[in-house]
Image 1 (cartoon, one colour):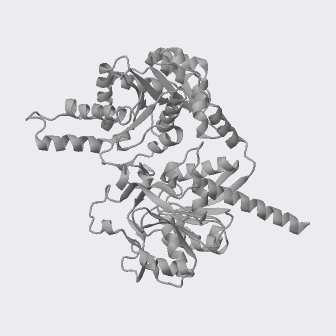
Image 2 (cartoon, helix red, strand yellow):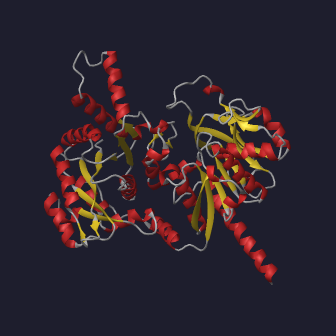
Image 3 (cartoon, helix red, strand yellow):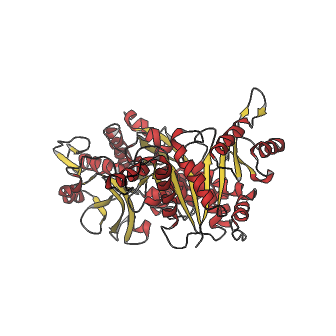
Length: 543
């Protein structure tokens, strides 16, 4: 079978949205009936982003097979049905590590090992690997991290140049660039785009399509100028204007400019009519909400949008399903001093995280939500904070804590996983990937899922200590989900509370705008119903 390949590069500056653009293209091609696979190349030397600070890199997205990957894979999941695995993300660290291991084994028969051909061959092999990870894949989208001109990106760009020469009629290049508007001059400037494309062409890659990220629609003369100086056809210069309402509108904007049709023509693949009805309906729901809610997100990195990217998106998906507008109140956990810092929220979510900073603030948030019957969703560390709070203030265990926070805690409600004892390396050593979980039938969690067996993705080192299970259950903590192959606690609920659920896994990784994760959908639905009840009670009281 002949595979088709699309290479997506970026120029001028970072953070242009290559990941969302790539995901949008994947979604549009799937609407043509094509099976798509997606691959992200990251030029940094870390083997994976697992040990990187969220402020630098954003969230770590985990796949079913336990790979810690770039957050762009989250975009791929939310927009498309591309298979996602360790074959979907490769870093310079992985590439060089593999080549060096082969050299040490003597695989190169005494040859001098060099960037060309050995590193570039390894990069090309990863592209082929991605194409073959599942049966029936027809198109492979390859996104190259960073911008053209970065030293660390050069081996990837050289590998792509070689790959395109080897697959001349089965590949195309899309370049995403920035076209700035200078307010002082009152002009749109195409020169940065021209120079970015010139750099790319100097490497030997000639863009077939140029996507122009811009704040406002581009004048026709600017598009014509880019076409002329960058040597692409006029209709191949496509504007990518900042979307005002939602990022999920981007595929529709690209479709209006016939980007998907153009790709099919350039790659000589069938171009049937697309059915974007469901996607359009979803976007219209976002634009026309029937109400609004406020969720307090309590964490360490709340001011950095990408640190909890999948959580923000999954909350949005729940709001879309409920037809309401979502307002997120970002609450820095280490700045919570009193309950007044938590006021004004219809619900609370505490996401995953590591370390001591903000721990007591998260416990205070869990206590506030429990006492005031406010819906609470704890994920990973958020589940652990909820459990410790319950132990301290309901079960009468004042010294309850996590050994991550207090290694010698007298009452370690949360403790190190048995298999983590003695592990010294930080990268890729946690409980990672998808594990099956059995749900107790008479619980809110089981009602939300609609099934008694689920599979969810994990990324953690610490667990609920079963030594305390019976004591906490006696006071009203419900263990509503356990690992299928043992008694490892995966989910807890608080008896008698409208909606207080903590999960050890990361459900945000499996939520889409057209298919919200059951827990996020149920969480938002409960907030909406409680608001309606409260509003009704106020109206009845005033009458």
